[in-house]
Image (cartoon, rainbow, N blue to C red; front, side):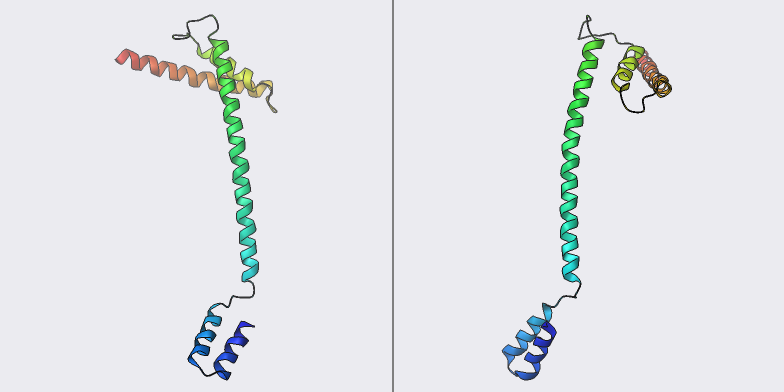
Length: 137
């Protein structure tokens, strides 16, 4: 329609204003599918925004839950101790971590034992490195 209107202005009306109007009309033309592409882009971006909103809200909940679990573990591990200088062994920390995940789906006794040996190895290795570092100083 815009092409027809532009052509009519150029061929039938021979004024500079008509030529300028024909050029303006030609510049406003879009491919037939451009409206569909614009709609798709708009809906896609709206979906992405909704997904981002959903991810952000879950992250805050998970962070709050993790903080509560960590505080509960610390309270249980330091019960009856000097909170400023508690003595927590790698085994105690590993057991506390396993207690927090033992109710999860898929937490079979075999999986928990594998997790326990892995965590215990990491914590003992970190403690040995810390002790070696303190000995060097």
